[in-house]
Amino acid sequence: DVKVTQSSRYLVKRTGEKVFLECVQDMDHENMFWYRQDPGLGLRLIYFSYDVKMKEKGDIPEGYSVSREKKERFSLILESASTNQTSMYLCASSSSEAGSTDTQYFGPGTRLTVL
Amino acid sequence: AQSVTQLGSHVSVSEGALVLLRCNYSSSVPPYLFWYVQYPNQGLQLLLKYTTGATLVKGINGFEAEFKKSETSFHLTKPSAHMSDAAEYFCAVSEGTEAGFQNLVFGTGTRLLVSP
Image (cartoon, rainbow over all chains, first blue to last red; front, top):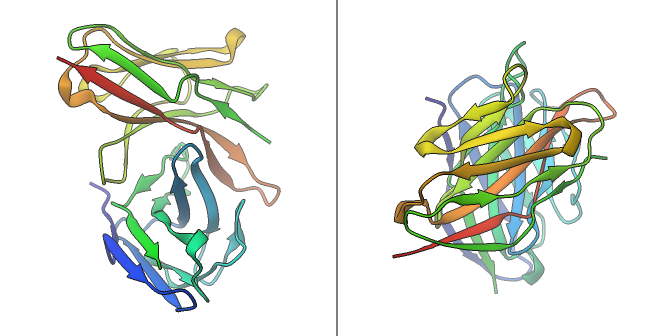
């Protein structure tokens, strides 16, 4: 089974702090994604990566950055946390192999509260 | 760009009743289609997916969905609801990016409530 793990289930930070959210997958997937989930808005894509050291902006990248130094790890960084970044953050991974059908596998999520 | 519409942010059924969660997408080209389920305080779990071939797709926990190209729909059904089905359900469609990669576009979700 694919396993995607996230470093924290719950996180409380203060406004202005630098926040790191870590995601690790164990299936050698090429693609990794960061979403935020808010009530009534569904999942919105923040950033994604299709290879090591490669990143692409999603729909809502403002206020976030990412890092992918190793294939299995994809980090989301909030340079200066703000209260409007209080949300559930979900990491996902998928394979680029032929026949993979774009299926994404999700981690358990990190619920971040910014005070 | 693709869009996914899930009719009804909340659906309430009684235990044993039919479950019907609606999903419509905007693509004119048959895409890959997915249903995911999210239990409280957990990540998303794949319920089922349509890629090619048979338009009626069976998933886990007794759920199934039918791809109807003429209606651009992919509604999720289960003949008899169980209390454990209470969760949030997301429909998603694959979309190609300008750079040639594939992402998923998600609907806003439908929360299924099951009463005894």
